[in-house]
Amino acid sequence: MTTNRFLFLAMPVRLTLCLFVSALMVAGLSGCGSSRHVSAKRVSSVGAAVSGKGSGASGASQRIDVSGSLPAETRRLLEEARRWMGTSYRYGGSTRSGVDCSGLTSQIFVNALQIKLPRSSAQQSEYCRRIDRSELMEGDLVFFRTGSKGVSHVGMYVGDGRIIHSSTSRGVIVSSLDESYYRRTYHSSGRVERYYAMISGKTGKNKGKTDKNKGKTDKRKDKPANAPDLKQRMEESPVSVPAEDLDRLLAGVSRKVSEKVSEKVAADPKASKAVSVAADLTAVASAAADKEKAADRVRKALEKKRRDLEDIIDQKVDSVISDYFD
Image (tube, rainbow, N blue to C red; front, side):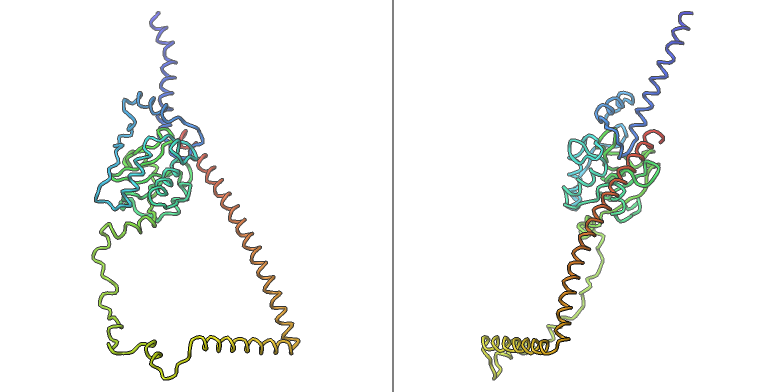
């Protein structure tokens, strides 16, 4: 009787513990963009205790190898990525004290190669050239749809089917694209054109291309060796005019032309009025152009603010949905 009563009282405690562990596991799968301030170290330590695994509980190796055979620009990206490992997650952050997913990719590219990427994951997806997943190479970006609408998470490919990214629960880690969560939420892959232009001549992909100028005849070789150039012919010309005399002659011609034009305008009232009207119209047009440029700058600034606010709202909503319904 006493044993049965004990078991009956222990059941709610066990149920509460199971729900708590399940909530932690769901939180560990969330992507970038959450509006909650999460302590990455606290959650990862609890998750490790539950799963019996360390910070690499995802199963992917947390080591980023930098091969000497890679282009220098790729090595710089990977070395910069290494420096961010273990950084805590912070929504909207872009420093070592806390960084979100798009902040991480932005900082890696600007610090390593001085390439400035757009700030949000959705904007980075539009900025990149779309590539197939099978074409991924180190430095490419991988995008995920963790919520109900569009791209809401991004990571950088580091080789061996893995990405470095900032997780809301564990901070900056390396994860495998073969994990079920990332296979399910995978959206697309993209390539930063400026980065690819830096390494395209060093990856061996341009081998076999012919030199476009090969076989073209140098026209200068057809010129006879003893053919005098223009300067030489002028020097040998029997008529020579000193440079200072030539300058005075040109100045005199220009002055006379100006005087003739002024005389014609002064003699014709219609022409004089037309010149005055033209000058006024030019001034008005210049002022209107300046105002239009100023208005355009204001419009662009307001549009950028609006897009940034929409991105922030989308990321917050998508992340909340992903945290509790994925």
